[in-house]
Structure formats: structure tokens, C-alpha cells
Image (cartoon, rainbow, N blue to C red; front, side):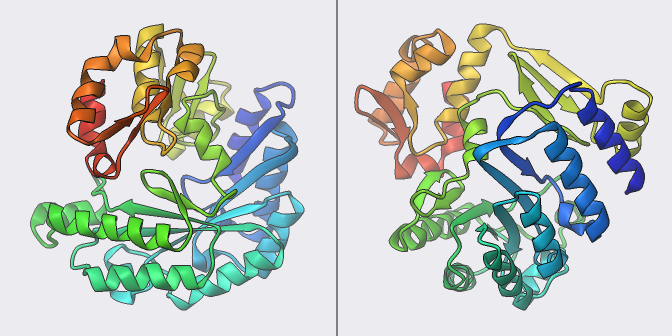
Length: 342
């Protein structure tokens, strides 16, 4: 941990001077797993090199078992005003399938601790877990709503290569849910959360009015962003870079003065515009034709007009002339639709 924090500090210092930002998100893992002194050190390095502008959003990810009142106080003192808690499920047997170490009761304790310092709370839930029923998913959604979060993310389970769950799937030890069953869970989340007053503002994300994740909206608009740390991605001046995901290699590179990036590409203007289509269509706001032209220099219909018209005829896309967005049906087949648009 000491060596990693040293390397992260060195990568940030390569900025040479502080770079004020509108939003910060520390995640992609569990930063609150750090003990209090190391957590303070992490936050100090980040805020030294990336000072948050007035009224900025400062988010951090946490698991229910890695956060307590002491750590929450440290977060608040550093300016953190939004905590994303990985609840995943309130059913112990599903948490075991997902290899989560916390107990359901720890979620409410974590939420209470964050609430005490006035920060916003976001809860993550996972659906499509092997063996999961609609009744269990409904109970998870209801329990999460009882905790009154400001924001909720509902992610369909993916089998990431190399994980234990992926190996179990490959061996036939676990059986993924049928697509129709997973679809029923997703549409039930839409119905339940929208009825509870949440805006379905991105395929997997729901927020109470005024509580959308500002940081993630930068990604979904395909706008520039910094990225630091092992596996981090950045998009600056039209150049996209990805840091190595190998922890030891990351530390070796950065501490020896090398770049942590192992992958880099500079998209030509048309590629960048097509990528913007693929990302922005995921939002409930969809793609504004005028804004798209200003941002990319391309006309939306020149690039994807035929595909958009086809999907509008099928009922997957709504087109009001000013812009296009996914319909409810379109959200359910978004990945295939986006491939078509590309």
C-alpha cells in the first residue's frame, strides 16, 4: 500500500502544477479499504494536485464493511460530498455468490454514517445473479429504497474473465439467468425506481431530481477527463490513454519516471464523432443534433441517419427532430443497437 500511494503521488506530480477540476471520483476498487492514515494520505495527494472548484462534486467508492464514522469524518474533512456504496444485494446467499464479504446489516450502518456528514449516498445493486428470483430482486430494490438513497445504480452481472465466478461458469458450476429472466429484472427495476421518483437518466443509473452523478455525465458526454492510478483511463486533447492494470508494473514504471500508459490512441475526427454517438445515446437525454455538431463538427444524420431511422421505425429510438434518444424498448437492446449505429 505504501509503495502504491508513493507511485500514485508521483504520477499526479507529473502534472507539474495543480489542475483545478469540476469533479473527482476515486474508485475502480475500494479506496476506503485503506486504514485511516493512508486514506488521509490518498485524499491529500489527490486534492493537492486536483483542487476541486467551488461547488464541485467529490465522489468516492466504498463497500459497506470498509467504512465507519471515523473514515467518513476523514472523507468529509477532505471535501468528499458523495459516497457510492456497493450494497449489491441484501440476500446473504447472493452476496456469497458474488464473493462479497459484508453482511446486509452493514449497508444501513454505512448509509447512516455518510448521512451524518451531509454527503449524498449512492447505492449499487446487481441483478442477473445465478439463482436470483424476481421476488428477491424486488426485495433488494425495496430495501434499498427504505434507506432513501439519492442515487442508485443497477448493473446486470457480467462474467469477467479470470474471476472465480467466470471460472465457475466455464466449468458449469453456475448457470447464468436466461435472457428473458434478466430482462424481467431490468424492467422491474425501471418500473420500481421510476415510481419511487427516480429519473432513469442513463441505462444503468437512476437519480432523484438534482442528484445525478456529475462526474459520470462527463464520460457519457465523451468530454475530456484525467485519470490516475493502476488501470486508469484518461481522455485529454483528443488522446485516449489507458494505464497498465498490472500493479507491480504500474509501480515500477511510475517510480522509474516512465509513463504508466500501456495503450494510447488518438482518434481521427470521424472516429471520435462515432464514439460520441455510442456513448451519448446511453443517456436519457440522448443526442442533441445541434450540440453534437458543435462538439464533433459532424452532422449526426450524415454519420448514422439510416440506422437511426431504422431503429426509430422499430420503436427502439425516439426522434423529435431536435435530437434522438432510446425508448424503453431501446434501452433493453442498447448494446446491439449501438453496434449498429457504429
